[in-house]
Amino acid sequence: MGWADYLDTHQSRFVEELCEFIRIPSVSAKPENAGDVRDAGQWVVDRLVSAGMENVQLMDTAGHPVVCADWLRAGPDAPTILIYGHFDVQPAEPFELWTSPPFEPTIRGDRIYGRGATDDKGAMLIPILAAEALLAETGKLPVNVRFFFEGQEEIGSPDLPPFIEANLDRLQADMIFSADGSQWDTETPQLVLGLKGLTSLEITVQGAKSDLHSGLHGGGVANPAMALAQLLASMKSPDGRITIDGFYDDVVDLTDEDREAIAKVPWDEAAYLAQTGAPSTLGEPGFTTRENLWARPTLEVNGLTSGWQGQGTKTVLPAVASAKITCRLVANQNPEAVFDLIAAHVDAHCPPGVTAEVARNPGRADPFLVPAGHNATAVAGQVLEEVYGKAPYKTRVGGSIPVMSTLLDELGLHAVMFAFGHEDENQHAPDEFFRLPTFRRGQTAYARLMERLGE
Ligand code: BES
Ligand code: MN
Ligand code: MN
Image (tube, rainbow, N blue to C red; front, side):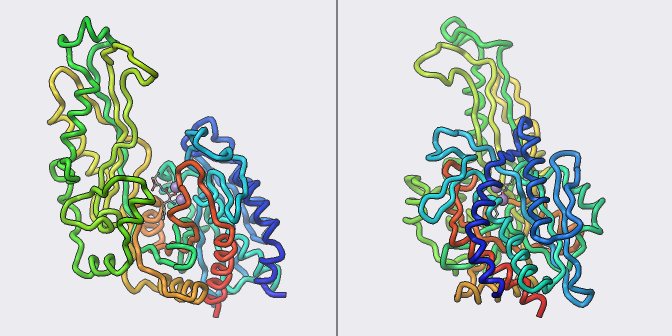
């Protein structure tokens, strides 16, 4: 037998294990699930031990724990790789929109449905299984391997910078591969060369000291819901340009090469509209939709709260209105500086009759760009080409992985996203799923990557 046969023989067990992993509701955003996040970390510890990894440890941070493990017996001449992933998941609400319950994994056709199936439980299990197969079949790994899995990616990894700084010895490597990321589609690989940064905030507009009768007081005092709407409308023009003073000042312009590289990747506007169900595209004028999705900063309202949200009419003049906002950032924007610009904008544009406050929300990330000619990216590209029979597209995504820039700062290494989910797998949404054939193919790719790096 070889590792490929091992992977085939054990595939149904691996799928059952993935089900077990998904059943743990490790929602990092909800305090009541903190124990589940820890249980998921412990599950990963046990799984790494049974795969044959050494020095496997659940390690505490100021928040959710991380898991470190290694196998360093390939010798000093072999390279050391660090493999990253996350075992926490996004909240699964609204539950009623799921076809099967989010934490009761269900296989339909060749897909496994459940929260975290693709982001990132299925994906982070892949390299563990590849290592298990290599170790079982050959008694060793071709390279030195470290694993680093976290339980707080989906809330912005707030406690990772100090953890990483204090545990550099457990993370030292020559290359980093992230099992969080994605492939283009089932037949086409990609190398994700850019992620966006993030800043996260909440605006609270306060009017009267409590809700009022809207007939008795309407026309007497300001309405915070209306004031918030006016404030939000002042932040973006209807054609899609962000109108916050200074917002674009630090943005590095796309070069002609950047725009050419982006335009090389096929784009089907009709398919995009069909996929999203939106009636038309809308983004910053002067850029293609793809450029806006991948390489221009954005400002999005993620949640709006005020007044009566139940059925029918309630004649109330709300006392408070609030909006949750995140901005996705590109080089060289800084999350804290952009927050300050928004706070200044709110101060300057607060409508009369109300007060407005801006507070940071958890979650921040620096933008992340992989430089051209990066060594580990080149190897990953060769392995993907071998496994898929096609050269990978060079892409970017609008999502963020906050720890990427921390690892770059602390270890001096750009991580390569070597991951096998797809963007259409309902990440963060109801009916999240992972393709089982991709789960299997990813295992081959990781095994080949390790072999290749050991040659
Ligand atoms: N896996 C995603 C990001 C991603 C998606 C990277 C597709 C590459 C391809 C990650 O889990 C994620 O969702 N990150 C959050 C971070 C935030 C909460 C700070 C995001 O982008 O919203
Ligand atoms: Mn993820
Ligand atoms: Mn995610």
